[in-house]
Amino acid sequence: MIWMGRPQNKVKIKWSPDFAYAIGLLTTDGNLSSDGRHFDLTSQDKEQLLNFRACLEIKNKIGQKISGQTQRKVFRIQFGDVNFYRFLLRVGLTENKSKTLGKLEIPNQYFFDFLRGHLDGDGTFHSYWDPRWKSSFMFYTIFISASKKHIDWLQKKILELAKIRGHLTKARNNSCYNLRYAKRESLTLLPKIYSKNGCVRLSRKYLKIKRALAIIGEGNLI
Image (cartoon, rainbow, N blue to C red):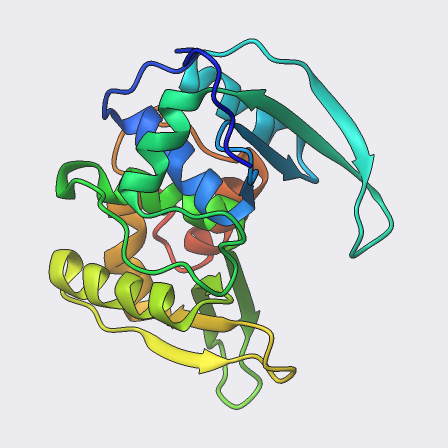
């Protein structure tokens, strides 16, 4: 049932680095209600929701709930805004988006800010010493989605704007797709994702990446 009340404007709809980052978080960790008005965002990191709230300039309370997947407490923010909901539909987000998500209308100027939110949401960064070669330190920047259409679009967009292709794999349990960028391509991609000094980001993930880059003498790359 679509909510038919008077539209409320809690969110200022104007593209900016922070706004694009928030859209990235909603794309991965957000949920659009079927009522045409409400959203929620969940994360194990309270900082993630504080960043999200600041980016959209809203003041809604951050609460907690038990995750249905892990049975652990996670942080959650909920709010309603009809106009913002309609905007997200125009961008390409949908309710029950996990497997239906496809191409999103993100301005090229703000794509890597969006991608930083995508990485902070469902993405991961993995590093390790490769035992096959002496002093070989490897790492991967990985974007994750349950939707093949969305991960295909993400790969094509990154290829268009960063000229790197990545490698697409499917999880062993077939639950999601992984778009992986190995060390050489990550060294091209990461400075674009973290190109702005003081850009909003999840500190835990950023510091993990920065420590890995420092091991190969590239700590100042981001």
